[in-house]
Image (cartoon, rainbow, N blue to C red):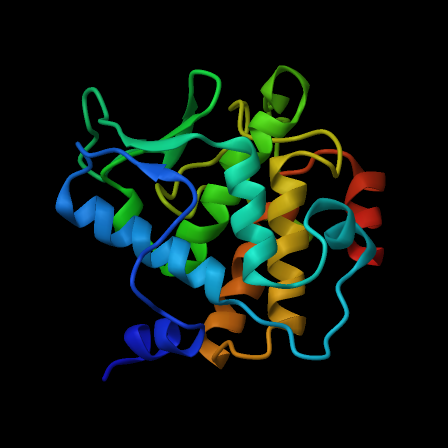
Length: 222
């Protein structure tokens, strides 16, 4: 059994029974990758680990039932979407909000690891829980990390400077990503090292999508 499937089984992969509806029109590969992500979220356990303050405010404890409830409270249905036209490297987004209560996943959704897929669902659900869907703001130019390197999209390799791909404060969708992923990395009792490593990696990507220095500091201190 390879590491990917071992990681899924470690957090309780089971027969898919989810509160949120999945469109009957969902293509098979996209459905499988979506159900894996939902099962991954629902299987997370914390043991004796204590969640951070921001995590407690967003979800409660580090527990799959809390993440499932968060999605269910904000999303009615997950539906398939297309890129028009689809770039050679794939869609530039994995998912997007659609209407008032639907998440639309793209053909690129199955191409990333299960941790990324899971946090994208929480990211999009967070939009629905915020006023005006918590829209993103334009990333500054230049847009550099602590080492002075361009901040790029991991999916496309393109710089995000000047794109509407950032948040101002810590309470938006990217802040949620950081909070969820850092708590997962340090508090999940049934996650493999592969999973916690990916969580730390994606947390840093989310951290640099927040423009405000004080908001970043608040996340680091959480």
